[in-house]
View 1 (cartoon, rainbow, N blue to C red):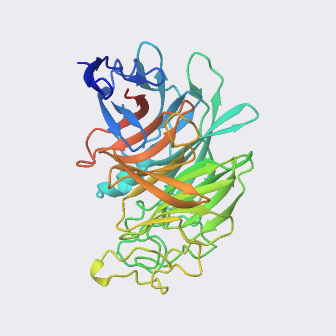
View 2 (view 1 turned 180 degrees about the vertical axis):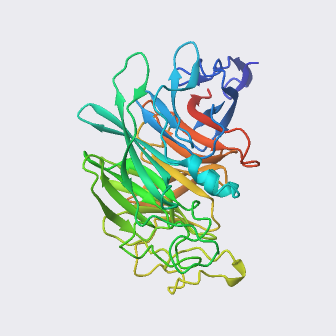
Length: 426
């Protein structure tokens, strides 16, 4: 049906033809994909967006995605590597011929088989493409199990992307870093040594290339914050509750920053040398931080959240009455928590008015949050509802955004990825 336009000068109503929606980029092959499940529209303040939803070929929770050339790579929670094959006929996320990353998940399950949450969270956490001298490497982070000592670490692995024009392949995985100390599970909830129960959840694990030789890796406190176990976050002899800089070639490492609870997101603006990080607070207090080397971000001594026993109305270890005094403050903190996950900073003009904005993803709230900055200060926050728990987020070179998602109603349901593409509505 044509639109009606009232011509004020003539007093007549004129018919004008509808202008069809204009899609940006080649997305025709998306709907022909055997993994495509639905396409829906999202209207944000400045953009109309097509959301193409695909079913993941892997049923496992966790895992991570990373942009590579004009497409992306997916490493599932068990260490299998997939590549999104995008062509004119159809697009599909296909398992590659690359070796599976082995971090002793099977042995961990055999030892801790009675706790499904514990075993599910014992998985791949982060993935980055590392570029140097026209060579490409994959850097992956996982929780890794030391079978002989029955303990676990946050670990990094390196694999070289091979120059194979016919098939995407990588070399075998090389272990390049293990956190210290190796944590041993305790039978009781309160322990006098590091390593209380349920400490595979707040693990962090995001990894990004920092310079020509090194990456930054986020590591959570793994429940060692003074409540169930001693506070080892503020202890510089350990690597938990910290961001670690690791040289991927000589394997040397050092503490970059401390005072982090569960840092789920990491993005490095290499042009401006700014490190953005997101992390979970307790009940409330999810944060976006700008990370500076050798700085302390306060956890567990400072937080804008409160204890999970909300009737206490405070976090017991915070003596500053939530002023965050004496430590680095976040540029944004949410109360109540949104279940914060990863973040990106938009580099392209694909989406109107989004360039240089932060896009923060969430698990519990199943939404994206667009943060517009002015000199590192947040001056605008826009909520963009997606409807699925968002585990990971990346921006492709063409400006499309890819989300790794989970069903918010049943964590054991099918997993998905969603590609967001701008369209011009008229």
